[in-house]
Length: 284
Image 1 (cartoon, rainbow, N blue to C red):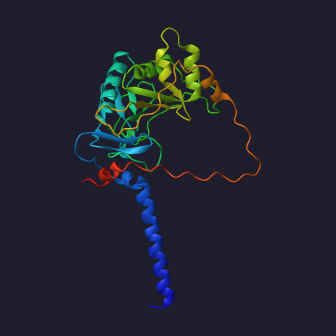
Image 2 (image 1 turned 120 degrees about the vertical axis):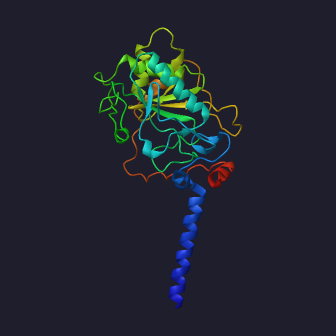
Image 3 (image 1 turned 30 degrees about the horizontal axis):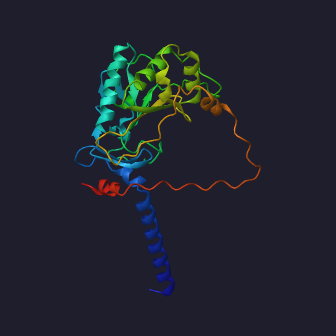
């Protein structure tokens, strides 16, 4: 082997070692490739956007008032409290005479970063619920991958789409927010404003409904850290009030213009997992 070939081989080995180091630090793709949960009781580790879950349980793919979609993603795993929440929520939806709701992503079998789609949903305490309220039969397996999912907002993001919005959407959000296990609910800012402008009577549940980017076709429910998971990192408490004042108005203030020529900000590195997630990652 010539000296040049030796240098090429060494360079390749260094490159592979560097890639392995990045993958070990990130771990997201590795978690995304794990198809089964680890054993033992369910235990949440870390924060919603930097964590994992040990002993996750699968949400049944259908039940009273709900049906899981995009099953092929294998993201219907979570803590027991999420399973209870979805099942209770589905029964309350059914009791309210609303159509069956579609349940989207919860977490991967061991949580962690996903290959695409979310920064959170890492610890089995987040669940996406789709707003689509058209009457619908139970779907065949193939049809569950790409069902009808209409946006509640206009295409130009100028307001609520009056042809889609109905009172039942506010009922869905209220039913979810009233569950004591729910920490907060993320919706598009226009949906939050619609609620602030139309809800009368008891408005205490509006406090949990928080504006966030996108979330015009679905709402994102986040549960509180469960008592059985001391390594779970909670979010800061939501401020008092219904969230319909200045904090909402600020979402509608245009951002200041960027300089004509400016270097793009560096892409932040994903936060590191807690050390306990390594055991979850490598558990049988």
